[in-house]
Length: 452
Image 1 (cartoon, rainbow, N blue to C red):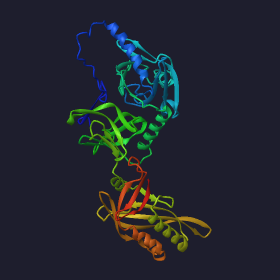
Image 2 (tube, one colour):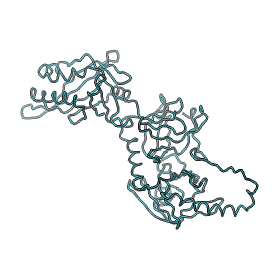
Image 3 (cartoon, rainbow, N blue to C red):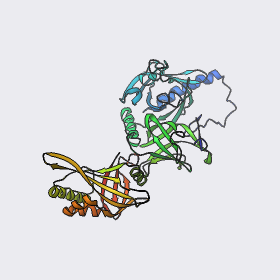
Image 4 (cartoon, rainbow, N blue to C red):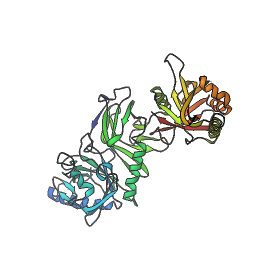
């Protein structure tokens, strides 16, 4: 992967516009360095409170690559004219997943340049430098004083740099009326939705003409390796944060990727709610998306995993009628209480026609006991780019006996001998459930749950 792209910390975020050039240069040095520094202190002290709704800070304690020091943390800050600052945070590591807020003091001081100092203790920020946390006696090694790299009147973004650790913190102006708790809660909920650590499927990154498999999204890092590469030796992990602005969610990596073939850096993506994917702000070939559903279904079945349907599974009205008639027929005629229908790979040999089985698991009374038994109906299966096609229904010896006695089961089984599309059921980022739709009739569909 290192041959394809290299990571470099941007000295200035690509999204910032630095317009420091001036047409009038003749009086640039009329004042001394000390006078210019004093003037910048006054200017920055006025500009910070002008964001009356506050700022969201993309805060990274260090430039490290491991949890928790290398993680990103969202901090909200509202700078007030009286030199107080209201801050808020919500994260698993430092606030135990609970909303936290605190008020302290701030000022702009002079050092080698203007420095934003949070000069009294604020639990939301100073806890990152608390030596009592973690084993090194340095806490998370975070900064609470920042060189002001760029801060301009009315600008949407500002950039700070940690005075000790040198880690960059981008600040984004919040929209008027932003409620701190609602903002942090919505971003947290969105992140958990798209990067659900319980999801059974991988995700994909497209970067230029290369693809990468995201195999882990835990602990605030995206870990990925080249498609077709080795998941152990070629995996790299990169911290990121998700923010919200203009009602859109944005994902920004701490470090920019140098896309050599395009001779440009890419760092930030925005979530497209229509396409259900993250798309690069400055480069549309930079994409994070869910794994293709048809491919996920086939690969899962090939690996021996299963999909399952129960009475409670979502179904279209048309398919629910077929299902209920079949379930009632089994109960009335055979005294079977249907538990579930599992979809599984039943191909005996790789040289043979691929087959897919429907395993009907049911409860039945045997003397004084209730036992669980099953029978399987097999189909020839052909996988397509959109899903799969079932044909040549074969109930087997046990299934044939049941089908012969329960006509409703025959109708159900025959209805499944057709072509299906496989779709995500809510979000392509989490394929714990998938939607199966008859290609010839969109009103015939049902939802299957993934199971090991």
